[in-house]
Length: 76
Image (cartoon, rainbow, N blue to C red; front, side, top):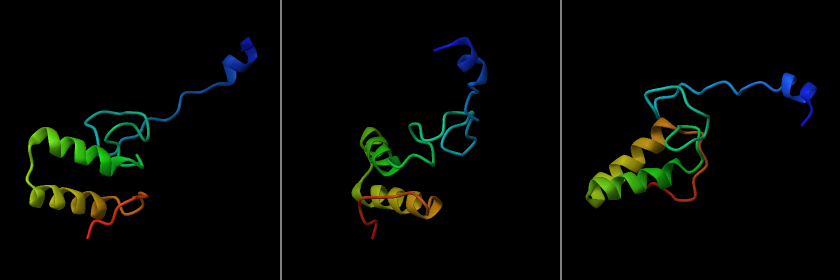
């Protein structure tokens, strides 16, 4: 990378969604813009030992709060 290219590179703007309590990279981890946010919700539900009803409520809540995210599973 040349010095001229390094000078023109700019950092991406941080995302301020409610997925984290601090500015973060867009589409990282539990960011609302992450297309895998449903899978992350499943992992967190496993860690917390949620029941199937609680897990379904969590997935429905994620789907309603992030209507634009692509998903591979139907929440209903």
